[in-house]
Length: 288
Length: 263
Ligand SMILES: Nc1ncnc2c1ncn2[C@@H]1O[C@H](COP(=O)(O)OP(=O)(O)OP(=O)(O)O)[C@@H](O)[C@H]1O
Ligand SMILES: [Mg+2]
Image (cartoon, rainbow over all chains, first blue to last red; front, side, top):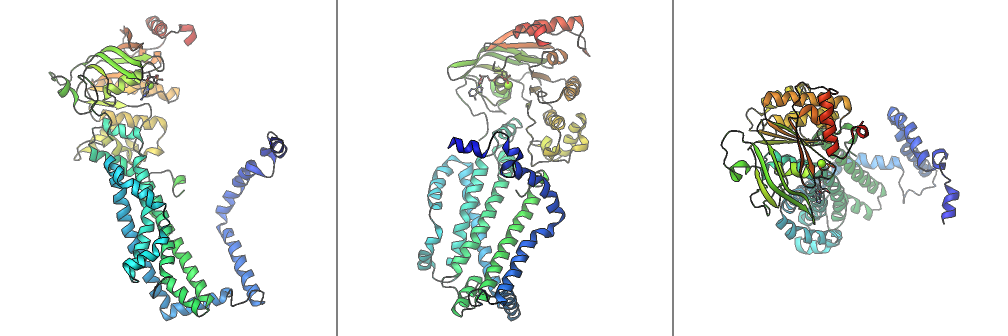
């Protein structure tokens, strides 16, 4: 074993070799500025794949029933837009995620504040939440349908439940992770407990909260996908399930693309929020 | 979560604002700092072992001692951040601390850091005045993480000054700075101390720094003050005068070093 390692990497080889950390670092140095200058290059591969895909479909290599050609997906999207169906289902889905996230933020933040700011709160709140978070919450769908029926409630509840955990866990860790040295400073400045929380503990926890929010949004869309594929009569997920019944793979692809764009857009929104709320961080570290 | 909860202290109260009112009646606006029989243990060893020290109002005292001798522990006790097991401490009500690292809140602009804990109505004006005193007014709206090391330490100094303390506690505030910046900071602290007339306790490893700044140098040894050296040199002080060299040799000797070793 040790012989093998020696063979692969004699002392200093990583600096010269074309593989390994040294080469990787050198590549980073060289390619980073060029990538920034030619941002378009990053779109080359996806575009190439699309062109190949269209060619494969047109030539009959890819059966249209299994994978529709990109142009057919675009056509389906245009039809859905013109008929107003896409906007309708999209707004229903957006509303569900917004409601679920709002509940998750309120619940996750309150629980994290209560647990993070008092030992009693921690002892009462943290153990059940730590236990509950190990449960794959999507497995609760049958129970939710029994409890809440098949209306909006189970779908919003599923989003809310899934998104609460990352908010709670990150904010709680952020509150508890406040730098004790700064806490000491607050004491020497004569800050009250409320002042300490307001000026030191909460600002220190904000980056963690925003990280939690980003995870929460990802989970919210995931929960929505699951929630909308069961007993729904509207929403992007319903649109896709309905299309399945009619073998309309092009519409399913439109649904996938919409989900992807929504995920991307909400991630960008949180990044923008981070840039604004965490303006005090040196520029290079924002959004990492 | 606040530092300094009441512990097993006999006459000490760890909490910050209890101050002299709790420990002893305040006769004048700025009473002398008096410590008697202070004991602080970490595990079986007593870091401070019946320590006595006086810091008269308006006096500048430099505290020296080997690494691990308990200098920071003593300073933290005076700052109300650490609770001693035993002993008596009389403190002026208004104290301020400058730490070795600047310890600024990175999410507050420089002036907001300086103004933190002040009453709101004139906080910004007072912060600006204090920042002007440390020659940092032009950076008052900057984020702390964009300051240089020396600038950040001056902001920390302004944050202490703006509280108009009777006792200024400095724990190796210049240790992390380059030699040139350190000289400028020493001059700045001397000027501020003269202008404001507060008592100061400066923890330092640097014998020359103690001799340039302080009225008294005290050396912490085996948990007590081993040497008390009045520094009667005229100000402004300079390195290398014969009187300076004599005091320097004496201080180095009590730290277990000869002048040749230190040079
Ligand atoms: N919270 C603590 N728990 C346990 N031991 C501690 C604690 N704080 C300090 N000590 C110990 O007490 C002794 C004195 O520490 P202190 O920080 O006061 O030394 P110092 O004189 O400031 O040293 P330096 O010059 O290196 O800063 C050290 O041996 C240290 O390890
Ligand atoms: Mg120390």
